[in-house]
Image (tube, rainbow, N blue to C red; front, side):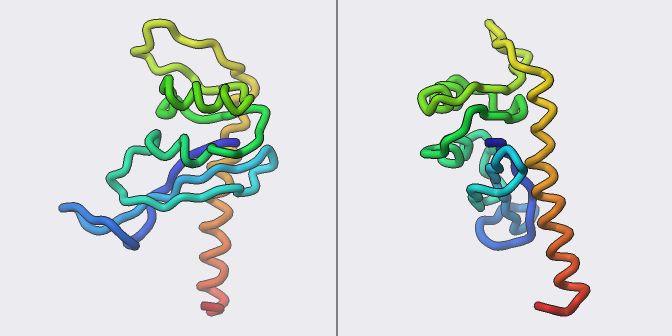
Amino acid sequence: ACSGCSRRQPRHGGHKRGLNSKIHLAVDAHGMPVRMLVTADTTADCSQAIPLIEGLEADHLLADKGYDSDAIVAQAEAQGMNVVIPPRRNRCHPRTYDRDLYRLRHLVENAFVAAIHIRCLALWAKIL
């Protein structure tokens, strides 16, 4: 499972810069979405990682260093996942991670790009 987020146009929540929201996404090993959460734009990405992975079965959790927290690592390991997250620079005892496997994290980014392309095609085809 991979996780990430993307900014979207208004749905809920707001702040002085305007109304925005974020999409947090978990994808499988083939880049297919398995879970999605939508939050206010001001929600920290890492705060949604545990709800995003809870109950999912996966061999690995790939995520960027913004998701490097003891709570996320503990949850993933409790679910039997091998954690593949680069350590933050301020970690006292950095974990090692599989750099080759980490390269597959782009699958979550690809899922966002695919969704954007599908939406654009629908708009251009005047389906909506």
